[in-house]
Structures are given as C-alpha cells and as structure tokens.
Image (tube, rainbow, N blue to C red; front, side, top):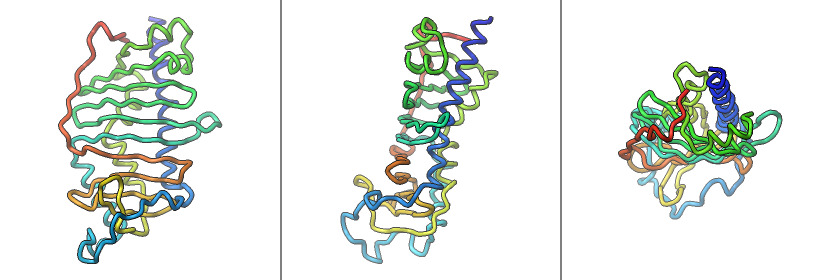
Length: 250
C-alpha cells in the first residue's frame, strides 16, 4: 500500500509540474510582447476585396466563430512549442497529440524533466514517462527504471486525474483560443498552404482558416513564447487501451 501511495503521489506531482509549464505557456499568448515581423507570414497573393473572407466581421467576431466551431469539433491534432516558468526558471514544453471526444493520446516533453505520454480511452487514463521524467519527479533510480516504458493507470481518485483529463481534452485548447482578445484582423495571410485570417491582439496572433469552417490553424506569439498548431480537424480517430502486461496499476 505504501508503494502504491508513493507512486500515486509521484504521478500527481509530475502532472502538476507539467500543467504548470503548459498553462503558463498558453497563458502567455494573452500577455506576450508584440510579435516579431516574421511571425506574420507574407501572403502568397494579394486578395481582392471580393475574396476577403468573413466580410463585415470584426476580429472579435471571427474569434467567436472559431471558438464555436471548436466546441462542435470531434477531433484535432495539436502540436505546440511553448515556454513558461517552472520553479523560478524558464522551461520549454513540446506537445504532440491527437485529441478526440472519445479519447486522446498526447506526448509532452519538458526541459530538464524528460517526456510523458498521456493516453485516455473513455474515462480511463494511463501515463507513460521515460526515466528522466520519473527521476525529475522524485522517483528513486530503481523505481524510475521500473516505471519507464510502462503504462501507469491513473485512478479517478488520484489528484493527477483531473489535470491529465484537462490538458488532453478539446475543452482545454478551446479555452486557450477563447482567452484571446483580438483587436485587429489581418487579411491575405497563409500558414503552410492554408489561407488564413490573422487576428492580432495583446502581442499575439490567432490564425483562423479563411476557407471552410473557421477552425484555428495556428496561435503565434513572439519567438520566445512559441506556437500552437492545429491540423486534421474532425479526422476519424480511435484509441485502444494498452495491454495488461504493459500496465502498472495503482
């Protein structure tokens, strides 16, 4: 029992640190310094007035349309590179995950803390960290090696459960986009090959697709704050629980 409580506490502590960096990085989108010129991609072609998307809509209204579209989405692939504060030092978190209404699989790595993958299938949650992650979370060397490479079942009673389900859910990323307060729209932009409308405000830009549904394509801050990219909206996804032999239950 003591070992179980110890590992459960490690999971909670590890996820608390991860959420602290992740939310600090996403929150910086609303307070970052004005983006550098390179942040706004040069348009591949000048748009005519007739081709301007969302005619008559303000930046705030387009953002509202994007948030509404996100709330109805069934899945998305998110990649992010963010910077935030952790225990008085600057840390970087990289996120790469597929998130759906029925589950998700998200891999995150933090400077000096290793990497962690969160798997959610229905209401069940597992995490899998490498040796560096568990060591940074306070696990003794032997325990860190034992946990590494295995899936750890996270009980709904564990304090980490809510944190895991929050960052690996569509609602979290919808909240990130909803937190913007854009004041200006910038037409004629392109992200990759996707025509977008840039919504600028408070030092950050939210790029919304100019064709099809108004899904967010990218959140861009200045070079020190990072970016969040959204692709494959509503693509069919499925998630399977790990094999029992790969799971350490709590």
